[in-house]
Image (cartoon, rainbow, N blue to C red):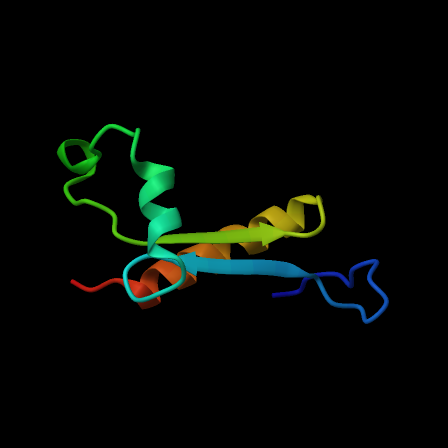
Length: 81
């Protein structure tokens, strides 16, 4: 991707990726986090069943871009159309 080296000792760009939902991670935490939210189905056409968090451990524009691309990749590989 042409991403410049990070300031980390090994030259990598650290990210944390976590996923939760039925059969993946802590379902109870996922349901509790969304219990008070309005139902999104009328607005987006489906009811989300899983959550994916992609967290950049650095705060540069490139880190946010990579986090966006990682999120899109995870969402694309987990779609069940």
